[in-house]
Image: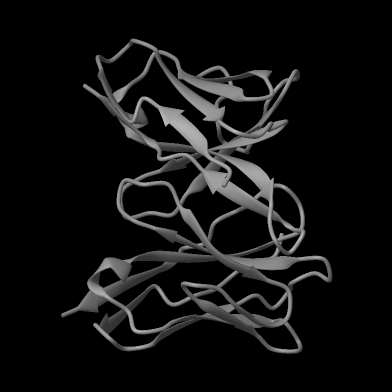
Length: 118
Length: 108
């Protein structure tokens, strides 16, 4: 089946540094990918929609200059957390749509990346 | 986007059947109902998807009444490894907005 690979699975960085998270569709092409953030004991929150070859679409309240998204190819989207601060510590998850058995789209998720900012 | 409502948490014992109901009163004609399972520190995993009536696969069944304003995920004979958060979503576009989910705790 379709696989979305996310790297790194966990990262620790100092406050003020930038961190890049990669999301790859391994055996299919994804013109659109989605980035979510999840805090402990909470649901997933959609941050942005990543579009291949064009600018990402950010959800309300998400700072586009802080969370840089690049979707340079049909199999790779990256999320860069710039000038990270402790409040950016969270679980970041990417996903891509795959056509399901019903004909409707089914989101396939990466394993997630745990970011801890010291 | 149709909003979903599900119980915050449920408890069960091993070997029991668990039914988790989700309400989606404003579901649109083209919306499909999809359920995901999430373990701690992992990405959500697709369980089952349906449009109407009943859908069954190797891990679960999905029951959808005629008015489609609700759906029930049925997990037969749960085990400890089924302890997870279960999310119900309805969507006909690409973007998925997650609700609170149901935290299922299975006890021995």
